[in-house]
Image (cartoon, rainbow, N blue to C red; front, side, top):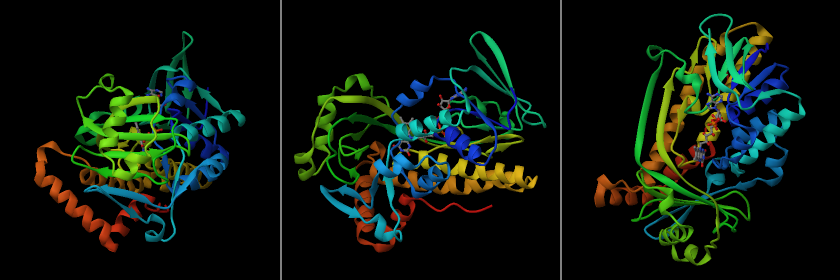
Length: 393
Ligand SMILES: Cc1cc2nc3c(=O)[nH]c(=O)nc-3n(C[C@H](O)[C@H](O)[C@H](O)COP(=O)(O)OP(=O)(O)OC[C@H]3O[C@@H](n4cnc5c(N)ncnc54)[C@H](O)[C@@H]3O)c2cc1C
Protein backbone atom coordinates (compact mmCIF):
# COMPACT_ATOMS: atom_id res chain seq x y z
CA UNK A 1 0.00 0.00 0.00
CA UNK A 2 1.20 3.56 -0.73
CA UNK A 3 -0.01 6.82 0.83
CA UNK A 4 1.27 10.34 1.45
CA UNK A 5 0.91 10.34 5.27
CA UNK A 6 0.81 7.17 7.40
CA UNK A 7 -0.90 8.03 10.69
CA UNK A 8 -0.25 5.75 13.68
CA UNK A 9 -3.19 5.74 16.14
CA UNK A 10 -6.94 6.41 15.76
CA UNK A 11 -7.35 8.56 18.87
CA UNK A 12 -8.51 12.17 18.51
CA UNK A 13 -5.16 13.41 17.17
CA UNK A 14 -4.80 10.73 14.49
CA UNK A 15 -8.41 10.95 13.32
CA UNK A 16 -8.49 14.76 13.33
CA UNK A 17 -5.22 14.95 11.41
CA UNK A 18 -6.58 12.48 8.86
CA UNK A 19 -9.70 14.57 8.35
CA UNK A 20 -7.82 17.90 8.08
CA UNK A 21 -5.48 16.37 5.48
CA UNK A 22 -8.35 14.81 3.56
CA UNK A 23 -10.08 18.21 3.34
CA UNK A 24 -6.90 19.52 1.70
CA UNK A 25 -6.71 16.60 -0.74
CA UNK A 26 -3.80 14.84 1.00
CA UNK A 27 -4.04 11.05 1.02
CA UNK A 28 -3.60 9.31 4.38
CA UNK A 29 -3.99 5.90 6.05
CA UNK A 30 -4.63 5.41 9.78
CA UNK A 31 -3.22 2.31 11.51
CA UNK A 32 -4.72 1.50 14.94
CA UNK A 33 -3.87 -1.46 17.13
CA UNK A 34 -7.28 -1.65 18.86
CA UNK A 35 -10.74 -2.21 17.40
CA UNK A 36 -12.95 0.79 16.66
CA UNK A 37 -15.35 -0.22 19.43
CA UNK A 38 -12.51 -0.37 21.95
CA UNK A 39 -11.35 3.14 20.98
CA UNK A 40 -14.92 4.43 21.34
CA UNK A 41 -15.33 2.78 24.75
CA UNK A 42 -12.64 4.91 26.41
CA UNK A 43 -14.06 7.64 28.66
CA UNK A 44 -11.67 10.58 28.77
CA UNK A 45 -11.72 14.33 28.20
CA UNK A 46 -14.79 16.53 27.97
CA UNK A 47 -13.91 20.24 27.72
CA UNK A 48 -13.10 21.73 24.30
CA UNK A 49 -11.36 25.07 23.79
CA UNK A 50 -12.46 27.39 20.97
CA UNK A 51 -9.25 26.50 19.09
CA UNK A 52 -10.37 22.84 19.11
CA UNK A 53 -13.91 23.74 18.00
CA UNK A 54 -12.42 25.79 15.14
CA UNK A 55 -10.28 22.83 14.05
CA UNK A 56 -13.31 20.51 14.14
CA UNK A 57 -15.09 23.06 11.94
CA UNK A 58 -12.14 23.12 9.50
CA UNK A 59 -12.27 19.33 9.39
CA UNK A 60 -16.03 19.48 8.66
CA UNK A 61 -17.01 17.57 11.80
CA UNK A 62 -18.36 20.21 14.18
CA UNK A 63 -22.11 19.96 13.48
CA UNK A 64 -23.01 17.73 16.44
CA UNK A 65 -20.51 19.41 18.81
CA UNK A 66 -22.14 22.76 18.01
CA UNK A 67 -25.68 21.43 18.32
CA UNK A 68 -25.26 19.23 21.41
CA UNK A 69 -22.18 20.69 23.15
CA UNK A 70 -22.77 22.88 26.19
CA UNK A 71 -21.14 26.33 26.02
CA UNK A 72 -19.65 27.26 29.39
CA UNK A 73 -18.86 30.86 30.30
CA UNK A 74 -17.44 30.25 33.77
CA UNK A 75 -16.12 27.79 36.34
CA UNK A 76 -16.45 27.72 40.10
CA UNK A 77 -13.66 27.30 42.63
CA UNK A 78 -14.65 25.87 46.01
CA UNK A 79 -12.30 26.41 48.97
CA UNK A 80 -12.78 26.94 52.71
CA UNK A 81 -16.33 25.65 52.21
CA UNK A 82 -17.51 28.40 49.82
CA UNK A 83 -17.81 28.65 46.03
CA UNK A 84 -16.45 31.55 43.92
CA UNK A 85 -17.21 31.98 40.23
CA UNK A 86 -14.53 32.82 37.64
CA UNK A 87 -16.16 34.63 34.72
CA UNK A 88 -14.18 33.06 31.87
CA UNK A 89 -16.19 34.85 29.21
CA UNK A 90 -15.91 38.33 30.72
CA UNK A 91 -12.25 38.01 31.69
CA UNK A 92 -11.02 36.50 28.40
CA UNK A 93 -12.63 38.98 26.02
CA UNK A 94 -15.71 36.92 25.17
CA UNK A 95 -14.25 33.41 24.86
CA UNK A 96 -15.88 30.24 26.15
CA UNK A 97 -15.28 26.49 26.37
CA UNK A 98 -17.63 23.77 25.10
CA UNK A 99 -18.47 20.68 27.12
CA UNK A 100 -18.59 17.79 24.63
CA UNK A 101 -17.11 14.37 25.38
CA UNK A 102 -13.98 12.99 23.73
CA UNK A 103 -16.01 9.86 22.95
CA UNK A 104 -18.40 11.95 20.86
CA UNK A 105 -15.55 13.81 19.11
CA UNK A 106 -14.04 10.42 18.24
CA UNK A 107 -17.38 9.07 17.01
CA UNK A 108 -17.91 12.13 14.76
CA UNK A 109 -14.40 11.79 13.32
CA UNK A 110 -14.80 8.04 12.73
CA UNK A 111 -18.11 8.54 10.95
CA UNK A 112 -16.68 11.30 8.74
CA UNK A 113 -13.73 9.06 7.88
CA UNK A 114 -16.00 6.20 6.91
CA UNK A 115 -18.27 8.52 4.88
CA UNK A 116 -15.23 9.82 2.96
CA UNK A 117 -14.13 6.24 2.19
CA UNK A 118 -10.71 6.72 3.84
CA UNK A 119 -8.62 3.71 4.85
CA UNK A 120 -8.37 2.91 8.55
CA UNK A 121 -6.73 -0.36 9.62
CA UNK A 122 -8.11 -1.39 13.01
CA UNK A 123 -6.66 -4.34 14.96
CA UNK A 124 -3.16 -3.87 13.50
CA UNK A 125 -0.65 -5.90 15.55
CA UNK A 126 3.10 -5.34 15.97
CA UNK A 127 3.12 -1.97 14.21
CA UNK A 128 6.71 -0.92 13.43
CA UNK A 129 8.22 2.22 11.86
CA UNK A 130 11.14 2.05 9.41
CA UNK A 131 13.55 4.42 7.63
CA UNK A 132 11.98 7.66 8.87
CA UNK A 133 15.50 9.11 8.99
CA UNK A 134 15.75 8.66 5.21
CA UNK A 135 13.60 9.73 2.26
CA UNK A 136 11.29 6.68 2.00
CA UNK A 137 9.72 5.79 5.36
CA UNK A 138 7.60 2.65 5.80
CA UNK A 139 5.14 1.32 8.36
CA UNK A 140 4.76 -2.43 8.87
CA UNK A 141 1.98 -4.24 10.74
CA UNK A 142 0.41 -7.66 11.06
CA UNK A 143 -3.23 -8.42 10.49
CA UNK A 144 -5.17 -11.62 9.78
CA UNK A 145 -1.98 -13.67 9.93
CA UNK A 146 -0.17 -11.63 7.24
CA UNK A 147 2.47 -8.88 7.35
CA UNK A 148 1.55 -5.65 5.53
CA UNK A 149 3.64 -2.64 4.58
CA UNK A 150 2.71 0.98 3.89
CA UNK A 151 5.09 3.16 1.88
CA UNK A 152 4.63 6.87 2.60
CA UNK A 153 6.17 10.34 2.43
CA UNK A 154 5.83 11.02 6.17
CA UNK A 155 4.72 9.26 9.37
CA UNK A 156 2.56 10.99 11.99
CA UNK A 157 3.00 9.35 15.40
CA UNK A 158 -0.41 9.95 17.02
CA UNK A 159 -0.37 6.78 19.12
CA UNK A 160 -0.52 8.15 22.65
CA UNK A 161 1.78 7.83 25.63
CA UNK A 162 2.24 4.04 25.32
CA UNK A 163 2.59 4.00 21.53
CA UNK A 164 5.35 2.70 19.30
CA UNK A 165 6.24 5.99 17.53
CA UNK A 166 8.13 7.75 20.34
CA UNK A 167 9.65 4.40 21.37
CA UNK A 168 11.08 4.01 17.83
CA UNK A 169 13.26 7.11 18.19
CA UNK A 170 16.89 6.40 19.24
CA UNK A 171 17.33 7.33 22.92
CA UNK A 172 20.14 9.78 22.18
CA UNK A 173 17.89 11.79 19.82
CA UNK A 174 15.11 12.53 22.32
CA UNK A 175 14.93 14.34 25.66
CA UNK A 176 12.20 13.32 28.12
CA UNK A 177 10.89 15.53 30.97
CA UNK A 178 8.58 13.92 33.51
CA UNK A 179 6.88 14.70 36.82
CA UNK A 180 4.68 12.11 38.54
CA UNK A 181 2.21 13.33 41.19
CA UNK A 182 1.62 11.32 44.39
CA UNK A 183 -2.11 10.85 43.67
CA UNK A 184 -4.65 9.95 41.01
CA UNK A 185 -8.24 10.82 40.10
CA UNK A 186 -10.97 8.31 40.85
CA UNK A 187 -13.65 9.10 38.25
CA UNK A 188 -17.29 8.06 37.97
CA UNK A 189 -19.55 8.55 34.93
CA UNK A 190 -23.28 8.33 35.72
CA UNK A 191 -26.58 9.12 34.05
CA UNK A 192 -27.63 11.72 36.61
CA UNK A 193 -28.15 15.47 36.11
CA UNK A 194 -25.05 17.53 37.00
CA UNK A 195 -24.96 19.17 40.42
CA UNK A 196 -24.39 22.59 38.81
CA UNK A 197 -24.54 24.19 35.35
CA UNK A 198 -20.80 24.89 35.47
CA UNK A 199 -17.76 22.84 36.54
CA UNK A 200 -16.85 23.04 40.24
CA UNK A 201 -13.17 22.58 41.16
CA UNK A 202 -12.91 21.83 44.90
CA UNK A 203 -9.94 22.29 47.22
CA UNK A 204 -10.77 20.62 50.55
CA UNK A 205 -9.03 19.17 53.61
CA UNK A 206 -10.06 15.72 52.31
CA UNK A 207 -8.48 16.36 48.91
CA UNK A 208 -9.47 17.64 45.48
CA UNK A 209 -12.81 16.95 43.79
CA UNK A 210 -14.24 17.97 40.42
CA UNK A 211 -17.91 18.15 39.47
CA UNK A 212 -18.08 17.92 35.70
CA UNK A 213 -20.56 16.74 33.09
CA UNK A 214 -21.00 15.45 29.56
CA UNK A 215 -24.60 16.65 29.05
CA UNK A 216 -27.67 17.82 31.02
CA UNK A 217 -28.31 14.20 31.98
CA UNK A 218 -24.83 12.66 32.23
CA UNK A 219 -22.32 13.67 34.93
CA UNK A 220 -18.61 13.03 35.38
CA UNK A 221 -17.27 13.35 38.92
CA UNK A 222 -13.75 12.87 40.29
CA UNK A 223 -12.12 12.68 43.72
CA UNK A 224 -8.39 12.75 44.46
CA UNK A 225 -7.12 9.40 45.82
CA UNK A 226 -3.64 8.16 46.79
CA UNK A 227 -1.63 6.74 43.89
CA UNK A 228 -1.72 3.22 45.32
CA UNK A 229 -5.55 3.21 45.70
CA UNK A 230 -7.41 0.48 43.78
CA UNK A 231 -10.75 1.02 42.04
CA UNK A 232 -12.05 -2.34 43.39
CA UNK A 233 -12.01 -0.76 46.86
CA UNK A 234 -14.60 1.83 45.83
CA UNK A 235 -18.28 0.86 45.74
CA UNK A 236 -20.56 3.43 44.10
CA UNK A 237 -21.90 4.30 47.55
CA UNK A 238 -18.40 4.89 48.94
CA UNK A 239 -17.61 7.17 45.99
CA UNK A 240 -20.78 9.27 46.39
CA UNK A 241 -20.21 9.58 50.15
CA UNK A 242 -16.66 10.81 49.62
CA UNK A 243 -17.70 13.27 46.91
CA UNK A 244 -20.53 14.59 49.09
CA UNK A 245 -18.08 15.15 51.95
CA UNK A 246 -15.96 17.38 49.70
CA UNK A 247 -18.82 19.65 48.55
CA UNK A 248 -20.40 22.78 50.02
CA UNK A 249 -23.80 22.38 51.75
CA UNK A 250 -25.83 23.59 48.73
CA UNK A 251 -24.11 21.26 46.27
CA UNK A 252 -24.34 18.39 48.78
CA UNK A 253 -28.09 18.99 48.93
CA UNK A 254 -28.43 19.10 45.12
CA UNK A 255 -26.20 16.11 44.32
CA UNK A 256 -28.14 13.37 42.51
CA UNK A 257 -26.47 9.95 42.67
CA UNK A 258 -26.98 6.79 40.63
CA UNK A 259 -25.23 3.65 39.40
CA UNK A 260 -21.85 4.27 37.76
CA UNK A 261 -21.55 3.60 34.01
CA UNK A 262 -17.78 3.70 34.32
CA UNK A 263 -15.39 3.95 37.24
CA UNK A 264 -11.60 4.18 36.94
CA UNK A 265 -8.48 5.68 38.48
CA UNK A 266 -6.18 7.82 36.32
CA UNK A 267 -2.68 8.63 37.63
CA UNK A 268 -1.55 12.25 37.19
CA UNK A 269 1.59 13.00 35.23
CA UNK A 270 3.34 15.87 33.47
CA UNK A 271 5.48 14.70 30.56
CA UNK A 272 7.13 16.27 27.51
CA UNK A 273 9.32 14.68 24.81
CA UNK A 274 11.59 17.05 22.91
CA UNK A 275 11.83 17.55 19.96
CA UNK A 276 8.59 16.44 18.29
CA UNK A 277 10.14 15.73 14.88
CA UNK A 278 12.70 13.13 13.84
CA UNK A 279 13.41 13.22 10.09
CA UNK A 280 10.13 12.17 8.46
CA UNK A 281 8.46 11.17 11.74
CA UNK A 282 6.34 13.78 13.55
CA UNK A 283 4.89 13.16 17.02
CA UNK A 284 1.54 14.70 18.00
CA UNK A 285 -0.76 14.61 21.06
CA UNK A 286 -0.16 12.25 23.97
CA UNK A 287 2.67 10.56 22.06
CA UNK A 288 4.71 13.69 22.76
CA UNK A 289 3.24 15.13 25.97
CA UNK A 290 0.93 14.44 28.90
CA UNK A 291 -0.64 16.95 31.28
CA UNK A 292 -2.50 16.22 34.51
CA UNK A 293 -6.23 16.61 33.68
CA UNK A 294 -6.72 19.63 35.99
CA UNK A 295 -7.54 22.41 33.52
CA UNK A 296 -8.61 20.02 30.71
CA UNK A 297 -5.70 20.62 28.38
CA UNK A 298 -4.80 17.09 27.09
CA UNK A 299 -7.25 16.74 24.22
CA UNK A 300 -6.97 20.42 23.35
CA UNK A 301 -3.17 20.24 23.09
CA UNK A 302 -3.49 17.18 20.86
CA UNK A 303 -5.85 19.14 18.59
CA UNK A 304 -3.45 22.11 18.53
CA UNK A 305 -0.54 19.86 17.46
CA UNK A 306 -2.45 18.39 14.53
CA UNK A 307 -3.65 21.88 13.59
CA UNK A 308 0.01 22.85 13.14
CA UNK A 309 0.98 19.53 11.55
CA UNK A 310 -1.81 19.55 8.98
CA UNK A 311 -0.91 23.11 8.01
CA UNK A 312 2.77 22.18 7.66
CA UNK A 313 1.94 19.18 5.41
CA UNK A 314 -0.46 21.29 3.32
CA UNK A 315 2.24 23.94 2.78
CA UNK A 316 4.81 21.28 1.99
CA UNK A 317 2.71 19.79 -0.81
CA UNK A 318 1.47 23.16 -2.10
CA UNK A 319 4.77 25.04 -2.01
CA UNK A 320 7.32 22.19 -2.20
CA UNK A 321 8.99 23.79 0.82
CA UNK A 322 9.99 22.27 4.14
CA UNK A 323 9.92 25.63 5.97
CA UNK A 324 6.72 24.94 7.94
CA UNK A 325 7.66 21.31 8.66
CA UNK A 326 10.98 22.58 9.99
CA UNK A 327 9.18 24.88 12.46
CA UNK A 328 6.59 22.30 13.61
CA UNK A 329 8.39 21.10 16.73
CA UNK A 330 9.38 24.57 17.90
CA UNK A 331 5.87 26.05 17.46
CA UNK A 332 4.16 23.11 19.19
CA UNK A 333 6.56 22.98 22.10
CA UNK A 334 6.12 26.68 22.85
CA UNK A 335 2.38 26.12 23.27
CA UNK A 336 2.83 22.75 24.99
CA UNK A 337 5.10 24.13 27.71
CA UNK A 338 2.63 26.92 28.48
CA UNK A 339 -0.14 24.34 28.90
CA UNK A 340 2.20 22.16 30.96
CA UNK A 341 2.88 25.14 33.23
CA UNK A 342 -0.82 25.94 33.62
CA UNK A 343 -1.82 22.33 34.28
CA UNK A 344 0.99 21.89 36.83
CA UNK A 345 0.07 25.17 38.55
CA UNK A 346 -3.66 24.40 38.72
CA UNK A 347 -2.91 20.86 39.95
CA UNK A 348 -0.54 22.19 42.62
CA UNK A 349 -3.11 24.76 43.75
CA UNK A 350 -6.11 22.43 44.03
CA UNK A 351 -4.81 19.10 45.42
CA UNK A 352 -3.76 17.92 48.85
CA UNK A 353 -0.03 17.15 48.89
CA UNK A 354 0.47 14.94 51.97
CA UNK A 355 4.11 16.02 52.37
CA UNK A 356 3.18 19.73 52.47
CA UNK A 357 0.94 19.43 55.56
CA UNK A 358 -1.12 22.24 57.04
CA UNK A 359 1.33 24.92 55.85
CA UNK A 360 0.80 23.84 52.25
CA UNK A 361 -2.98 23.96 52.69
CA UNK A 362 -2.80 27.50 54.16
CA UNK A 363 -0.65 28.71 51.26
CA UNK A 364 -3.13 27.24 48.76
CA UNK A 365 -6.06 28.95 50.51
CA UNK A 366 -4.21 32.28 50.51
CA UNK A 367 -3.48 31.95 46.79
CA UNK A 368 -7.08 30.95 46.02
CA UNK A 369 -8.37 33.93 48.03
CA UNK A 370 -6.03 36.21 46.05
CA UNK A 371 -7.04 34.53 42.79
CA UNK A 372 -10.77 35.12 43.18
CA UNK A 373 -10.39 38.70 44.44
CA UNK A 374 -7.68 39.97 42.09
CA UNK A 375 -8.80 40.80 38.57
CA UNK A 376 -5.26 40.31 37.26
CA UNK A 377 -4.99 36.82 38.78
CA UNK A 378 -8.52 35.79 37.67
CA UNK A 379 -7.77 37.05 34.16
CA UNK A 380 -4.63 34.95 33.97
CA UNK A 381 -6.60 31.85 35.01
CA UNK A 382 -9.37 32.63 32.50
CA UNK A 383 -6.96 33.25 29.59
CA UNK A 384 -5.22 29.94 30.15
CA UNK A 385 -8.40 27.97 30.83
CA UNK A 386 -10.15 29.01 27.61
CA UNK A 387 -6.91 28.25 25.73
CA UNK A 388 -4.00 30.28 24.42
CA UNK A 389 -4.11 31.26 20.74
CA UNK A 390 -2.17 29.35 18.10
CA UNK A 391 0.66 31.11 16.29
CA UNK A 392 1.04 31.12 12.54
CA UNK A 393 4.04 29.67 10.68
C1 LIG B 1 -8.22 8.22 31.94
C2 LIG B 1 -7.96 9.51 31.21
C3 LIG B 1 -8.72 10.64 31.48
C4 LIG B 1 -8.49 11.84 30.81
N1 LIG B 1 -9.24 12.93 31.10
C5 LIG B 1 -9.00 14.07 30.45
C6 LIG B 1 -9.75 15.23 30.70
O1 LIG B 1 -10.65 15.23 31.53
N2 LIG B 1 -9.45 16.36 30.01
C7 LIG B 1 -8.47 16.38 29.05
O2 LIG B 1 -8.24 17.41 28.41
N3 LIG B 1 -7.75 15.32 28.79
C8 LIG B 1 -7.99 14.17 29.46
N4 LIG B 1 -7.26 13.08 29.18
C9 LIG B 1 -6.25 13.22 28.14
C10 LIG B 1 -6.87 13.07 26.75
O3 LIG B 1 -7.78 12.02 26.75
C11 LIG B 1 -5.72 12.83 25.79
O4 LIG B 1 -4.89 13.97 25.83
C12 LIG B 1 -6.15 12.54 24.36
O5 LIG B 1 -6.78 11.28 24.29
C13 LIG B 1 -4.95 12.54 23.45
O6 LIG B 1 -5.32 12.06 22.19
P1 LIG B 1 -4.28 11.27 21.30
O7 LIG B 1 -5.01 10.95 20.05
O8 LIG B 1 -3.01 12.02 21.19
O9 LIG B 1 -3.92 9.95 22.13
P2 LIG B 1 -4.86 8.72 22.49
O10 LIG B 1 -6.24 9.16 22.74
O11 LIG B 1 -4.14 7.97 23.55
O12 LIG B 1 -4.90 7.85 21.17
C14 LIG B 1 -3.78 7.08 20.75
C15 LIG B 1 -4.27 5.93 19.90
O13 LIG B 1 -3.13 5.20 19.42
C16 LIG B 1 -3.38 3.82 19.57
N5 LIG B 1 -2.10 3.10 19.66
C17 LIG B 1 -1.30 2.97 20.74
N6 LIG B 1 -0.23 2.24 20.45
C18 LIG B 1 -0.35 1.89 19.15
C19 LIG B 1 0.46 1.12 18.28
N7 LIG B 1 1.60 0.55 18.69
N8 LIG B 1 0.05 0.96 17.01
C20 LIG B 1 -1.10 1.52 16.57
N9 LIG B 1 -1.91 2.26 17.36
C21 LIG B 1 -1.53 2.44 18.64
C22 LIG B 1 -4.22 3.72 20.83
O14 LIG B 1 -4.95 2.52 20.89
C23 LIG B 1 -5.11 4.95 20.69
O15 LIG B 1 -6.30 4.67 20.01
C24 LIG B 1 -7.46 11.90 29.84
C25 LIG B 1 -6.69 10.78 29.56
C26 LIG B 1 -6.91 9.58 30.23
C27 LIG B 1 -6.05 8.39 29.94
